[in-house]
Image (cartoon, rainbow, N blue to C red; front, side, top):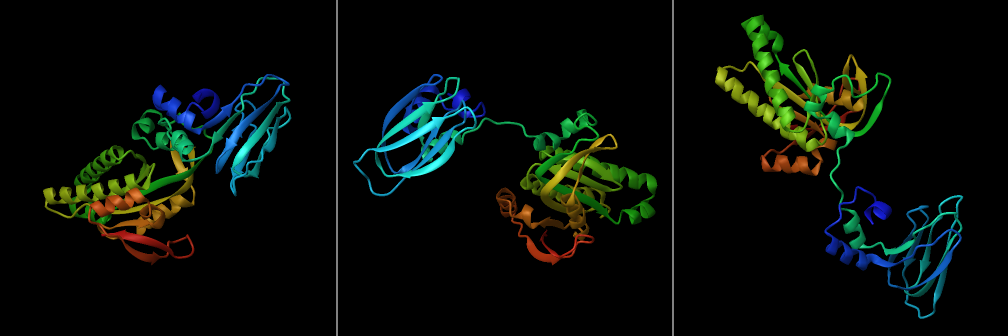
Length: 331
C-alpha cells in the first residue's frame, strides 16, 4: 500500500492500526485490466472525495456538498494512455454510480478515498530524511568532503538557509596593545570556541575572513541559539582573562541563496548572504542583530522567550542594499 499508492516516504503505523485507518478513509477500490470497464456503487457523505489511480496518476476530485438526495447520481472516469485525467466536480450527498473505464494497455488500480482529516493525518506522517540543506550545513560533512560536494560549474538553489556572521570589535587595537603573538593566540582560541558552538547547534562554518566567521544553519532557531551561546562564551572568556579583549558582534539573516564551489570549498552567494554580512555590521559590542524573517521563526521566538531576551525593533539602512529594513537587536 505504501509503495503503490502513497510513496516510500510515508511513515505508516503498525499493521493493525493501519488497516483500521485505511478502512476509515477508503470507500472502494478495484483492479482493472487493459481495456476493462467497471461500475462502483457508492454512498457519498458530505466531504471531499478523491478517485485516484497510482499507475497513470489519473485523478478525479468530488466535492460532495449541498442537500442530500435519494436519486442516484452518475459519474464516469476514463483512464486513457495519452495523458492522466484530472478534474473536479460537485455532487450532492447520496448514492453514486461511478463508472471507471481503462483505455490503457496495462493494469490500473483506481481507488476512492475520503480526503478528510483522517487521510491528512495518515499521510502527514513522513519518515525522517536528510535534505541537501542539512547535509551542506553539517560541519563534519564539510570537513570530510570539502571539495567533493559540488562541481565547479554547478549551482544549487537553496530556498531557505540561515546565515550567521561574527566579527571581533577592536581587533586591530588588540594586536597593537598585546602584540601579534598574544593577539593571534587569543583570536585562535575564539575561533575554536565558535567552531565548537556552531557544530553543536547543527551548523557549519563556511569560512573565516580575517577575524570574522561566516556560518550557516538549517533553521533560524539554531542560529539564534548559537549566537546566544557565543556571546556567553566570550563573556566567560573575558572574565577568565581579566580583560575585554574579545568583544563579539553578531548578525543573523535567513533567506534563499545559491550554493557553489569556489576556491576548493563550498560557498554561498546571493542577496541573503550580502544582507547577513551587513546586518552584522550594525551590531554594537555584545549585541546580536537579527532580521525579521529570523526573529519571526516560532522556534527562535521560543528560545528568546525562555532566555528572557526581548528583541527591540529598529529600522536600519544597510550599505549597498537600498531601502531601510526592519531589524531586531537582542540586548
